Length: 111
Length: 113
Image 1 (cartoon, each protein chain N blue to C red):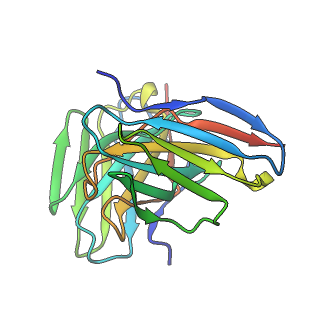
Image 2: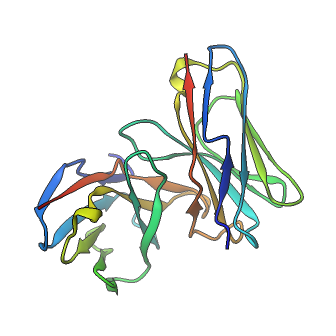
Image 3: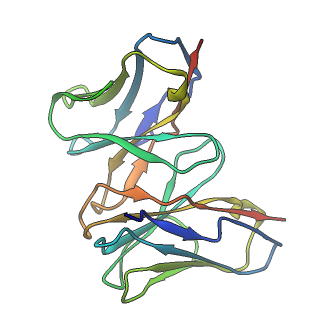
């Protein structure tokens, strides 16, 4: 089992809809979780992090964490074409500064 | 307010050559981590440095080495390049050695022919 798993997609949603991106992790001891957005040919950009069970909202983005089920999700409300990118889930493993990434989910927002 | 900077942005090398990549962290950040990202995959951890000391190493061969300077900038060196070393090399900075929130630079795209 991979440490961090994501569906590679592509996930296609119409403009204005809610995009739901999911990530599961294997280490029950994981305490924090990060979502990065990566546009094609660019580097990852941090968009959200979450430490506690439940929801964390930041603008159109909501991160949801369920430690009992070992999954974290990212919801994007009112999806825009500019949200089209690959979304990477990352979990600190081993030393706190080592992030283990999933393969990323490619999101396509269609007009 | 400058973010993480990396140089060069692109690099083409041939097999067997050596390459040095450079990174300057965000002002005030003392920790630098290096990642390798091949097409279609998430970044893979290579090294973390803090206060000029190696604090973590990923599953990469000894051909990969790094160092950090007193001004917290860092270099990643790869010897005896292989075709499989072609990737985007990312530098990430964070406040301290156990600060998990990492901010990435623009990366160096390395092509090995």
